[in-house]
Image (tube, rainbow, N blue to C red; front, side):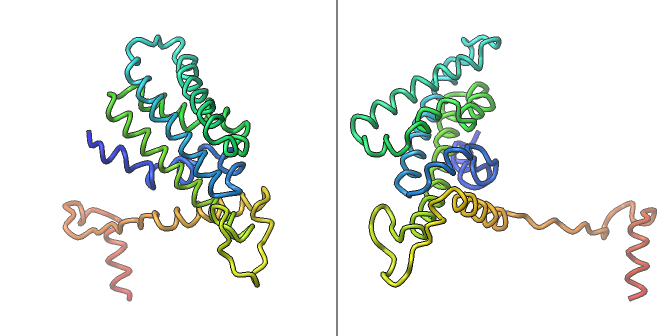
Length: 224
């Protein structure tokens, strides 16, 4: 198993926010500022990596009948640890994140990775999976938060960056602006990652002579 593949898939190919559309609630709620988005993303990444590690270690011990409750207990323990650390060292950020910090416990991204990956794979792949998914989630929150803060307040991480003659568009720090910004980012990522369908060529096919589609293609080409 390629550790790099497990790490990088969460950035674009399986990005929790922009591709799988998971964790939309905190994404829309806390991204009024880039700092809040970065803080929520890093807190989620810490919980995701640690819970994947522990769940992978205990996967053969946890009974299937109580699998999900055990996952939630493990995740809740790390969420409590993150909450205590933020309250002690970054009380302003903890206040800004509010209830959404505690709701990391039931974040479908973390539960999804625990159920789909960590409980079925070894420790190192699970850690890389959690780290990649967490950082991909962090990047999406940072991008959305940066756009909303710059357009909505003319600032970025609290620093004035917009010229004085440009009036900030307050709508971007409101819920409607969050939906609009997230939708635009998802659309751009979808457009950039969309693969063009491959053209099916009948040349060299052993069944070409008996194929109706090939005969029809030859007829159309002859008419042209």
